[in-house]
Length: 462
Image (cartoon, rainbow, N blue to C red; front, top):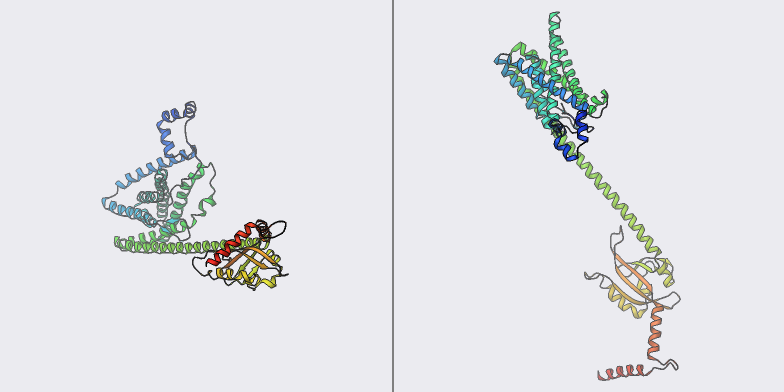
């Protein structure tokens, strides 16, 4: 059976006098001067309240007394029976190391119940209680690190088995005295005894967390996760009863022959369920991985869609001219600002080469830079060009070309950003004219004369 659950409402059992004295002392003094039993309780069972503590000690002491009585009873058996009891207890404890875990379930059962009920039928409740104590000890050490569970679980198993086993023995003696004993009656009674043992032991164990929370146990909740184990107990008891009946007919040989067969069957069942559990775990991991990948893909697609919407919104509503170009300069898409800048409609720009709206004198520089796009060292370039308006007037623009990979696109392209700098270039030309021409006559001034003279001298020297 499963060990005592560790969860519960924190609490500590103490006498009113000790609690009052502890409250009057500072924290370090209270911890140092607390009685030894109170310090032991705080470290041993810090989450136990008074009800749970009383119940735990009661079950532990009653289990110790029951175990002592069973040992005294077994000492009175012949030495030949000691060997049989020892072998049965050893097999039951060994089975506790290899529980049979049902796939898709958090519970498990140990197959040692077969040998526990076999000892019950062969040597009485004392031998069965000793075997149940050993199996409970192994199970609690395997599943829990708390000493409260490691002590109380085998004690409760000892009490439950000794009580139900004694009830079975008394019932069979009563049936013999009235001439009602039969193999069929023994089989049914043994199965009922196994179910009763399971119920009593389950009530003992599950009562602890309810007492910690000061709640009344609900039978439906107590047996919701353990009901199927009762069926396995009844099945184990039936197998044990059949082995006992065969033992009465043919002697010890049938047990010696059946024990390895049962061990092989249980080992096969244990291995099969472990394989099923591993396969189920691998399948679950694959499903989880597929779900994670699907979720990541969905998030990635959503992020791409959001990014694409943001880009197109910024592209469409930008205040400067923007366009997507193929590497040869063909316009793939143009925004409203660029169309307004050159005075053309969308159908007039798309699939048109950008070079077509640039003055012929500036196209050579543009073609030279576009020819470097396929080179590895290309990172982008900027030029000041003169574009032609639909009405024929030139427009000075600052054009910046760079690589761009649109979300969802299979091939990269160029993104063009165009800003109208006509006013700046006109102002610069006006300042240049004022610097080299007379403001009254408009003729070149002395500074311009010296500049032209220097240029002429240079040409003559060449």
